[in-house]
Image 1 (cartoon, one colour):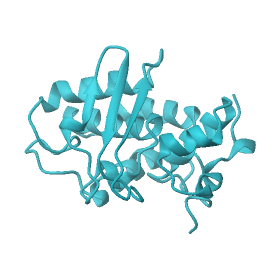
Image 2 (tube, helix red, strand yellow):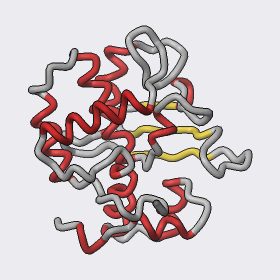
Image 3 (spheres, one colour):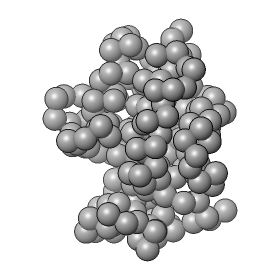
Image 4 (cartoon, helix red, strand yellow):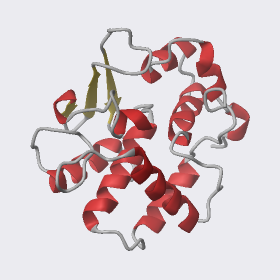
Length: 193
């Protein structure tokens, strides 16, 4: 599958459905805040699932700087990084889909200990299989498109940015794309405001 071209983008309508369903899931409070933070941060920061789950590019707690108004993430390693570091900044959103609020709520549960940014209660990293299962369960219980995947957040991020008039170069920088593959992620005809 070339870059996400066959997956639908995650939309704000989808996020709304997931938000409403999340309250009814039988997960522990920790798992609920963890999954919601992972979804919103991946959407707003153009994250790959492998940057949040156990991999050679997993984000660590010290790579994140959180304030009341913004989230900064320093990527020391990422797909196609070739030794280059990148820092991205995500601004606070005035909605229930704010990644800063979601991440702060998760950190309130997680604590500020060193280690993996997204982790189990015992500090072990989240595996991709674990995240995919929880993401898919939330999609399914929300009655959303079964083709939505963890990668749909990244596709949605690129699509919304393009719809908002962000240049392709800036989208590439935010998403850390090394080539014109970013074009496969922009699904403008699908997005309705």
